[in-house]
Image (cartoon, rainbow, N blue to C red; front, side, top):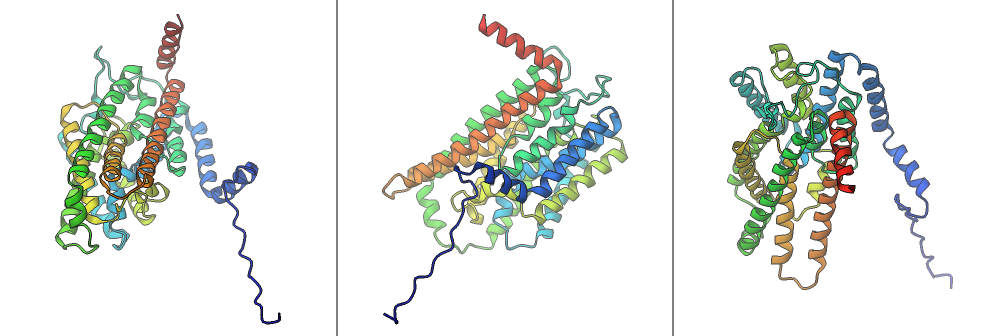
Length: 393
């Protein structure tokens, strides 16, 4: 009797998301994210304070957008690069990616007379008006409160690990009419479908070869060189496509001083991003099947950059690169789950669940974007109201 060992009791683990105690979930979230929430609250107060000062509102909105856009889009343009280079020092990755950014925007600034967006913000509507006019320079008005806080909304969604489209969220609040938004949505939707089909074809028909070749965790050193070249190209093309999301707060043609502030601010933001290793949004990439393998990451980035280059030269209409990336990842996950010869539906269900989760969050971001655009622009509110009335009649 005396030799019997007492069973040690395991500590009870409390689920942070306990459905029976929702009030504790909220309290836990507030305690864990108090620093972030304080920053957002201060940002909202500052936005309200500078709304009636055009210059102050412009720069505050830009500073918010500079980090918010890059932090959210790290999932697609830099996510696989960060994930497969975790062993590398963060500042080496930063200088490489930051240097490419500086070269890319400097080229557009010189060639396009002060425009750093590769003409993305010069897109015209069917009636000849600008699709994304600058509130002060083009319309002679001030920034609205919703335009200034749009990047803060993006930061909150990023914190919640939602891969929403920065293009929809930031550009939509500057669109004077719904036609500007609809053209972006159409181009982005077609990009998603094309990306899904291309990625599915690559990974499904090449699965056996890829699985056999990638079976060993060891890889030839040349893969590192290839990946850095492709990742650098992808980042450069992303800047050409999505640089407009940040520069939308600034004049369409920048002065030398404005250009230096624009460039150095984003360069510093990239440094923080790499120091944090992508922060929480990086988990969207980390969950995917063996994406940390440098060879798999390289194939994903290669298909992605091919589509972005194709879409880049079709038209100057901005496009959601997030949706294209989700198509690339989604097609890959479905292809791998179908091509696997293991019995059971576990992998297929997991792939479908991940894709549905990513897509639904991106779709939620689109709904929020339209709501912000309607709040910021009377023209869009009127169009939505008239559309609802016509539908009901």
